Length: 147
Image (cartoon, one colour):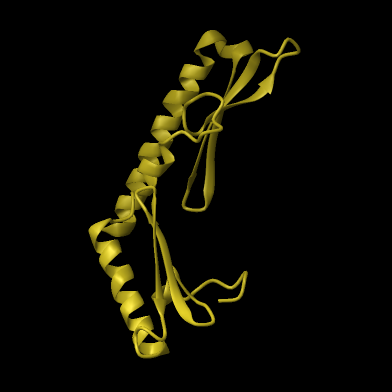
């Protein structure tokens, strides 16, 4: 598909090139990629059919990681080392002054901030607890959608 135009669901992870179909999907942190040449598979339609079968087999063997599991993994650039918990304000001396827990659920941002001025050294711990509650909300929302 042209850049900026998403593939229809039946074509997820599949792109047409000049002489082939390319399949690329990520499951459990690993990229799975394969090329299906038109010449090898007796034409455009036949190679697309084989490409879709391969994609579906990979997806069946390696299901998507649940969103709440992904959201609980800290990013490489996470300064706190806790996913979704970050310092959003610093004191003049460079010390953290406000910690925030943030999670996106159903298109809404859930966030809660804790000031060190108000909560003292417990501010980061409170943000971590708030993040755990937000992840639980996310899990419940996802389970209710799939029920």
